[in-house]
Image 1 (cartoon, rainbow, N blue to C red):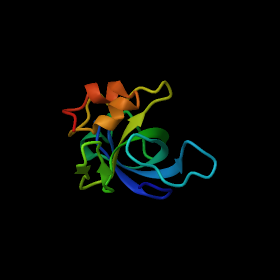
Image 2: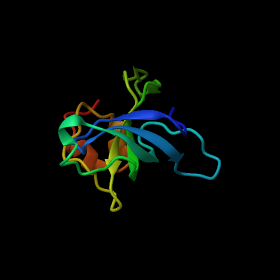
Image 3: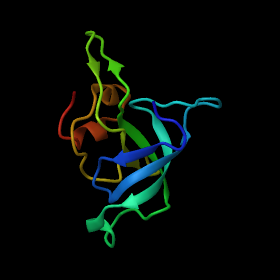
Image 4: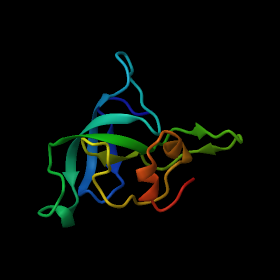
Length: 126
């Protein structure tokens, strides 16, 4: 469960290290977001090696797709999936990923929500 003011890790190679959730998109009184939802974020920290050649800058505002959450999500076969960190991947204004690679596997739910580009650039599907 992701809500406003949550600090999240960025799991793509866009240059951002951590971001803060500003708003959960998708409704007037919606306060929580889960895997596969889109949120608005602000860049908090940059990675050291990307400080001068980064695609993003500190303080910029982006939309982001939630890829991993610590909260357990149930699959149809009865098993549960949970990750160690809350992480996102940044999205540009056209809806495409900012980075060219996603580190680690992504849940199958992202493919079902029609974010196929994110599944293609990731290292696997769970």
